[in-house]
Amino acid sequence: MSDFSYCGMDCKACPVLQANQNNDYAHKQWLAAEYSFEDISFSADQLICHGCKSQSAHSHICSQCSIRSCAINKVSKTCAECAEYPCALIRRFVAVETDARNVLDYLHESLMV
Image 1 (cartoon, one colour):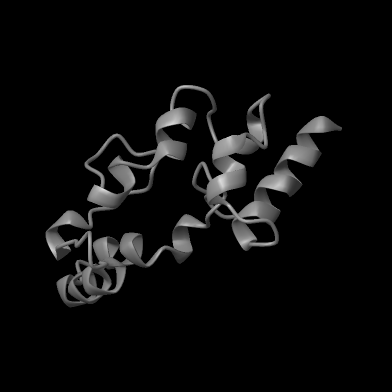
Image 2: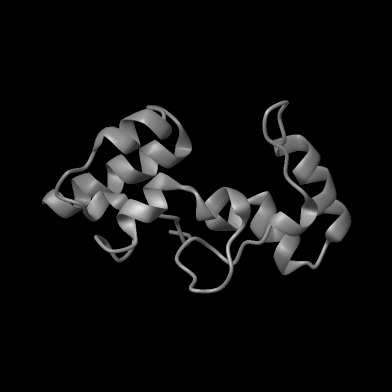
């Protein structure tokens, strides 16, 4: 399996991580516009990603991630390892039948065996 974030997202598929790894500032500008809304906007400089488990700087989006904040001191790989899985945060932010939730469910079930 690929390297997954705490929430089950495939880090290698993350466009912000890809743009950072490729030093693609134009892509980061496009992503900033794509991820911005009326009440919140992001700049390309705020989209920094080295993976949510990295100790390096994080994007403005990821630094405020409640799943990351919870998991960083509880688990080593993914939220599937947590005794409280699926907790309220996972149920709220990681929709059932998404790739990320399917990964977490699979990993959690394999740990239960």
